[in-house]
Length: 69
Image (cartoon, rainbow, N blue to C red):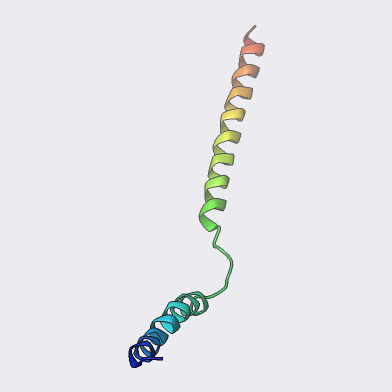
């Protein structure tokens, strides 16, 4: 093989290593903990509280209407 082919191979090796190593490094440097669902739990608790309050108001209004009739 010509010298230009060997130079090309030698220069390609660091790029291939970087192409493989950088994504692996980015994957393994972060912790493998699960996602934090605290915001979702707070949102669901808030919407549940609002729905419960709305249902309570509707029930109380229905009772008041029934008592008044």
